[in-house]
Length: 192
Image 1 (cartoon, rainbow, N blue to C red):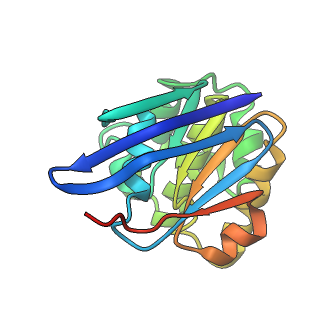
Image 2: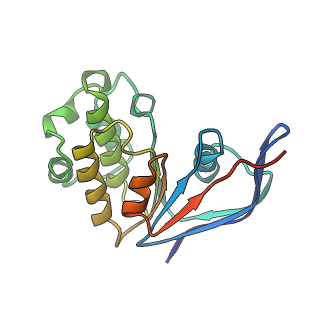
């Protein structure tokens, strides 16, 4: 099943062309990695797919999706516990089991975001995204705040969900992309 289809996408910031007739698809059961230098438009594509930005031209069709943001500190409200924020968007039945598989002590879910380390908070961000039971997972540098061992564990856990989702992985880490992705799309700067 196709979970994301982008056809003829055009987008620019003012006169700076980011995408010109760009097309991409992601199917359930596959990981597509977007790699490229900073400023090439990886996060912009993430925002276009999520609906935070509107394309100037082209069509984006997507199934039910959830997001893993690069900066976990800005993706949680500072005044509510992690569990409250997951309960706002997802059914939390079975959350303790999934949390343990991600090396998250279930007690951490009762804390406020600032009480967790960056790595703990990023794992909670991934946990929240998975608890939403998406068909498409948009992951913007999902392991950048994690050490290598935890990063590997988290990516292996995401791979376990591949029969249920398609993953669009935005990363600077070409080694990670080569390890887990079915397809790698290297974005190049557009000439203005």
